[in-house]
Length: 421
Image: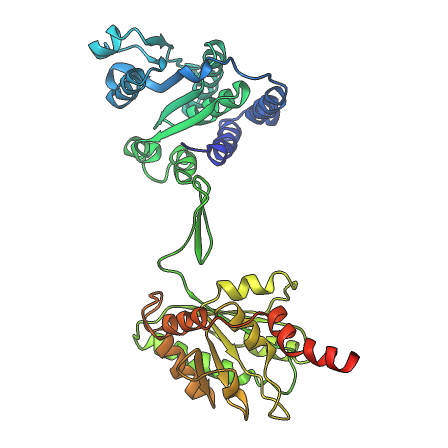
């Protein structure tokens, strides 16, 4: 089942542009937008569908029914499962005999309107699209109530927009069978760079309705979010941008990492997120901007408290540059990262080993060269979780580290009770 909201938006804009290019005035060119708005208004006031509508399905092909075996098969399959089918399309070639003899299938022929016969070619084409749109919409809202409208693409212009609008008006579900790309077929006649082909391409490329980021793919059909196979690695570090954290160490390590990539090492691109506020932030931002990385992107956002753990949980590796002035205070940023099961590379200082277990939940480095080698080592198997990075994350999950509340209750609460009682 396809949610065609994205496709209809693109088709509607395409119709507007087509009208403008063909010479229509702005008011006439915006007519498709007005129609869509009207559909929303009317649909919002509709009453519930007929209780038997779930047995009715409209199968639509904006082409010759007899030369559309795929849609005829759809109709026959629906009929075999007890649905009453209204098969809509052009009646140029005789449909399959099984279609004609099936009592559950009604054929509703529509005329292929030609549009205007005078004027520039693109104006004639635009008028044909407009006339066909209104005729098809009229047919779809006149038939008895349906539970589904099932259409084949191609053609998608204007059938997707019209069928979607009718389904919104009547409260139907809208299904698209993405059989082929309309723009590739049109390109055979008009050429790949033709304006009409470009317009037709837009709704076709939304066939998955897939929302993409640099890291993930979100299917709006299933709701599933998966990590992209070719995604960059997400590196995160947080700082108060003060003197006790020398971020030139990280920048130098990233320069070495860039050289590794350009030398042919099989390593992913990096997105390095450095969060926090502090007095040296502007200094380092200027330093970052002066770098000419081709495989590394550095950003320095400020995150709200509730967003920070989400970012940590999404990252692949954390980097800690905190050097304790006393050599005694363990960095809370590493505690946060471990709480999100995020492995860490941390710069060495006196008591760090109490928190970061080298080769168990992360790695400890002493300088930028050592950090760059660790980045190369940990990301050489990316995005596989079978290498060291995956082992560190697995160890963190299995360590069963206490959360703040439990740890506080165990260590701090007894002290308070002891001195208060």
